[in-house]
Image (cartoon, rainbow, N blue to C red; front, side, top):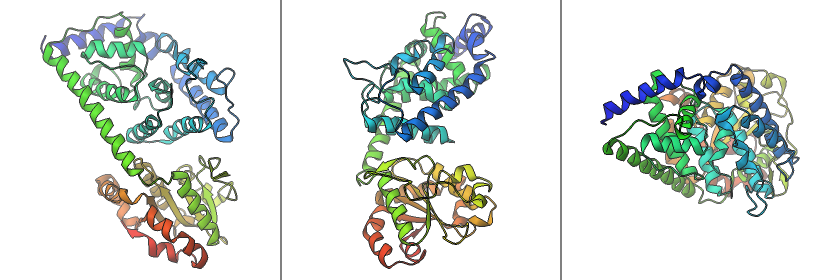
Amino acid sequence: MDGQGFDAATRDLIARWKEDPSATYQSWFLWSERIKNFRSIRRGLQVVVNEIREGSFGNAYRGSSLETVVHSVAEQRQIFRGADHAFLWKPKLRIPDIYENPENQRAFGRLLDHCACCNTAEEVMSHIRDIDRRQIKGLGPAVANLLYFLHPTFVPPFNTKIVEGYNRLTGAQVKLGSWSHFLAMRQGILELNERFRAHLSNDLGAIGALLFDIGSGRYPAPPRDEAEAASWADRLREARAQAAALNLAAAKGEGDERSHSEVQSWLRDLGHALGFRVWIAANDQGRVHDGKALGEGCLKTLPPAIATAPGAEAVRLIDVLWLRPDAERVAAAFEVEHSTSIYSGIVRMLDLALGGGDPHAEAGLYLVAPDAREADVRAQLARPAFARVSDLKIGWLAYGDLARHREAIARFGEGMKAIQALARKL
C-alpha cells in the first residue's frame, strides 16, 4: 500500500474507532469525568512537589502522596491500567531510585514542579532531557503519564500497549524504558497527529488512546509499504540523533561545574551584602545548597504592591529578586539559565517589566549563565518572538565574571553600580 493508501486506510480506521462505544475514544477520551480528573491529579502532583521540597515525602512509595496520585492516574479507565507499576518499589533491584536517594528524589520533584510551571513544549522537553541525563535507575518514560496530566497538548501518555501500537502503525522499533526512544516516539506522534489532525485532537490523549487500542489488538494497523515503514524508521533514528546532540550540547554547557543553586546562592549573598532585601523563586526556597536552604534569610512573601501587580504569579518564579530596603521596589531581577531554554526566564522578565506596576519601573534585568552560552542566548533573543525584549535592555552576567568579582563587589560595591558595570549588553 502506498502513502496515499495508508493515509486513507488510517482515516477509515480512526472513523470506525471513534464510533465504537467500547473503544477508548468514547469510553475514556469523551468520558465526562476526564477533565475533572485532570484537576485532581494536578493538585495531587503539587502535594508531591511540596512534600519533596519540604523534606517530608519520606522514603517509601506505599502510603505516600505519590501513591495517591498515581492510583488516581491508574483509575483512568483501561488506557492507564497498571500505571502504578513503574513507581512501585522493587526491593531486589532497588528501583526506582527516588525513595532511598534524597538527591534523586529532589530531582524528580523539580521535574514535576518545573514542568507544571512551563508554558512551552520546548521547556518541558528540556526538563525531560535534564532528568534523563541524571540516569536515575528505574525512573523512565512512564513518568510521562504524570506529565500528560500537566500538559496534554505537549506530552502523550505512555505505556507498553501505546508503544506497541505506535510500532505496529509506523513500523518503527521504539523500545520501552528509554527516554531517548520516548522523545523520538513523541516526535513521531506529533507528526501523525498533524497528519490526521482533522480526525483527532490537539489533546494527545486521543492519539494515545488510538495507539493503545492498536497495541492491544482491538484494531489492526493498516498495512504499509516498505517505503512508508522505512520513512518512519528513519524519522526515529533522526529524532534520537537530535536528542543525543541536544544532550551533548547541554553537557558541554555544564562544563562549568557550578550548579544553578550555587549561582542563586551567590546572588542571594551578594544582594544581602549590598543592602537589598532578597527574594528566591517560590519553588526554590527550600532547595538546599552547601547545607543551607536557598530561601534562608530571604523574604518569605513579596510586598503587596508586587504580589498583586499583573503577572505576579510569574514574577514569584524569577530565580532571584533584589528589593530596595526602603521601598516596595524591585531593584534587580536575575534569571539563572544553567542549561535549559531561556524562553521561560525571558517571559517572566517580560511579566515583571510590562506588568504595569510602578514597583517594577526601575528594575534591572539580568540573565546569568555559563560563559559558553552567550552565543546561544543572543541567537534566541534574535527570534521575532522576543522583539520586545530589546526595549528592556536586559544585561548578561557570565558565571566566570560573577565568580571572579562577586567578593570584591560585596566588599566595596554600592547599590547597582558594580553589577551594571559588570553586565554585558544583549
